[in-house]
Length: 304
Image 1 (tube, rainbow, N blue to C red):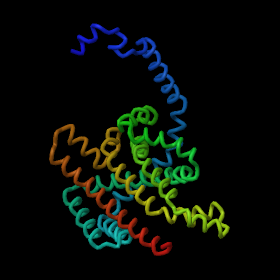
Image 2 (cartoon, rainbow, N blue to C red):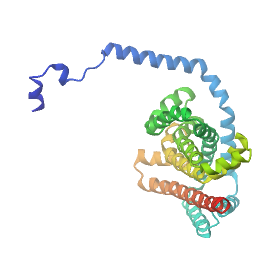
Image 3 (cartoon, rainbow, N blue to C red):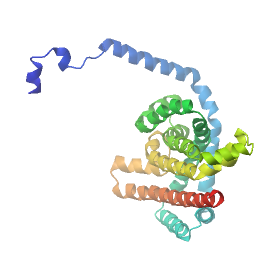
Image 4 (cartoon, helix red, strand yellow):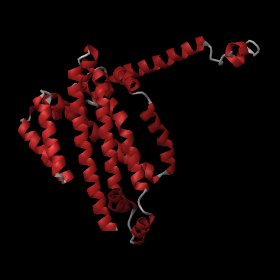
């Protein structure tokens, strides 16, 4: 029926107008050529600039993998307890990590933990200052928000194309792709947490003669810390979600095993490695949430 209707209408109304194919082909060639020229010109400089990041990642990975499992497990459970103050979460961490070790995934889990740790630290270093700037400037917020929207909605595989073209295959390209995917929640929730600070508290700080620096670090950031912790939590979750995709360009650990299981249709291997990723996500999630709740109660006691 639709085609019959088009018989009585101008072709322009039935077929959406498109740009000339030659023009589109030339446009694609010029963009691709320009990007390749950029890679040839600045690729080595960018590699050298990120070399310290490669060293740090390799060092942390060697530390996690080389440490005796009993020492690492003791340190991990201690940190979980100090952050959560929950015996239930601590015992769950101990049992879950024990199961991961029993099924032979300890070393791969350490590699993944090293990657997620570095990605989270980089996301905090990048996201916290940008979030603070957004909170202090509406113009900055309106400029950055569309960029964050693109970063969060663009398919993650698209990130891999320019990253691989510039840096090749390896851990650092995978790390960059993970950070691009994981940093937006850190930026958004830092901005949100600072903007939600009670205006009466800020007016009281101004009345006591606080400078902008003092007001930021002694009032706004402490009060926004529970929201910022939620941003760190979401960053960790998104980094873990991206690990499997990043394994396509040389990131090892559990993501590589999942990718191999998909390629070879090994259901059990995929299930076990997926279980390990879920365990890590739950440990980080429960611990950071418990720590955020403790911060919230502490803030309410001080400012309530």
